[in-house]
Image 1 (cartoon, helix red, strand yellow):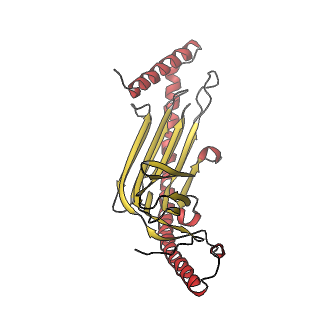
Image 2 (cartoon, one colour):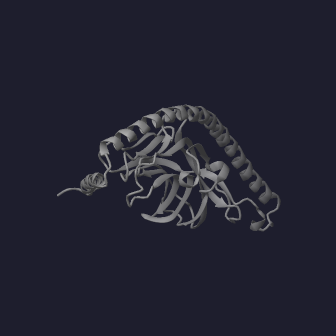
Image 3 (cartoon, one colour):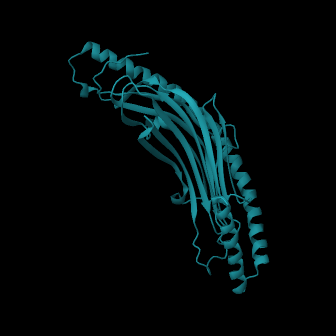
Length: 315
């Protein structure tokens, strides 16, 4: 019995065959059209290499900034903890809501494992690609995803996911704060080469998304999810751009979750790349070709909201 991927691949072949047959019936010289598309791709490839050089240079500067940001955030976190402890010692009667910071993070979760998943659609051929290499020691991964539609109406897509898993065990029932430290550095490009789609029911489609996902599990059930989109190039209005993300600066994925004391909590921090294109469109996200491109999760910080009335118990 054929697999789902094998069936999908056969459907793609059938679509391509029927599309080319329709073009011939409409008087299109398919061989000349393919030669024209091939020439356009060659010109695009040359420009893509030049753009890649520029973003590799800027990526090096971003990597340095992320390192400095992480060191600064650690100092600020320590000062916040010391400030809260000092205020409580000096003013024990002060109501908890007087503490204005949203959360403090005296603990870090234990690193457990990492994994990846790459899905290509179609799963055979050379029109799309995806890769991910993981360095557990550095809590770092290098990823890329590309979709290059070879011609009018032909779809190409890829999804690349890579995640790091952490764990901790809260002592008591209650509300806890989580702040995954996430750094992302890379660039994206998209190009719409046209194609003779005006005579066919096939509108141009582009997908180009990079996001960070958070999932918190306890007792084999998901108790919290969160997501932040770092790149959504469909609405960007340009052809290319560098991107970087630092959760310690923006904290969009900082979250609060109600947990059961004494039970292990598993935290999944994931980078997800999604690209897709048809009608000779090309879509690419690169977090791989430079040593300064990456998805990093150095640690997951956890603690309490600052109005939490329980004392801080350091390990």
